[in-house]
Length: 416
Ligand SMILES: Cc1cc2nc3c(=O)[nH]c(=O)nc-3n(C[C@H](O)[C@H](O)[C@H](O)COP(=O)(O)O)c2cc1C
Figure (cartoon, rainbow, N blue to C red):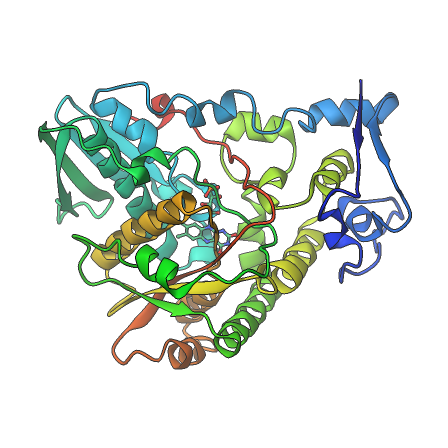
């Protein structure tokens, strides 16, 4: 079995002059990182597989069947079930931090209760569980849209049990009219897009339409960063925060825990961050899968480099969700609902979106360690909205290539 991949593909050249350091692998063997460095320099055509160990890794790591298999089935069957359980099938497709899928659902014919799963926290990377709660808010938004589309009138009660902080929401479902929506229809097409975006700007009226989806969501707002100076300043702070995370061994370790490099790991866990979702060109992606798995530090270098040369370099605009108090669990949940809405609206508009929370991850880490905040005051100066603080950050733009599916645990595994 042979697959021929042409690196002259439109943007394979993106990594032709990477800033990553040359191979420093102690064994001297070629790693994914070093291949990413060297690839494209001379080759006109790369032939993947064919014989020997290469073909084993092609199959082992899903080079030829990315986005297929049971770990990806939830993306195809989420509309099928018209009952209350069907709302969960839509909820689990939401954006969520590090694809930890931090949720548990209790479902009856006329209620869905959403719980946090504490075993799915991201440790020091999400030191104050901010993103954990935002991700639950994202799932709640999909659930509400799915309830409306199925003819339920959803009544959302946030944090209904003061004695149980893991009980995030109760959604009561009463009979109503079916309310389909373009946002609902976009649930299965929304993916994080970590690839390059084109130089085309996103017009102000498009951003303002995206930011206007706040109906019923109190206490959350959005601040757009669109001018070159604004974008450069925020991008530089994101890069500095990425470096700080990479330099913090505990944060780096807690991030690495959620990387799923091998297809077996994806099929077993059905969660975490995969190579498919890193926004790489087809040829780089295929090579990255075939070569031996990268180490934590090499992965960090790759991430830092992508942040510098792709994510911040090609961001057409940034959005920052702001709130009065980022520690308030209600505002985190409502902010998550807004983020998910914006991401769905961006999908409808054909825009790519990538969450980029390195700055607030460092803000919370400093708080956890009881040390002066390096990034908090700088971020507040950029947001420049008295009394408001950054809850969550993302970049947006016209993507060069489509985002790819990330794995999901099935409904049966997250319902009790
Ligand atoms: C609160 C929150 C924080 C996130 N932070 C980041 C981030 O800093 N960088 C990033 O690339 N993706 C981030 N993501 C995106 C998730 O990694 C992504 O949603 C998850 O892997 C599932 O993939 P999908 O969005 O394609 O379905 C974040 C998502 C959420 C909801």
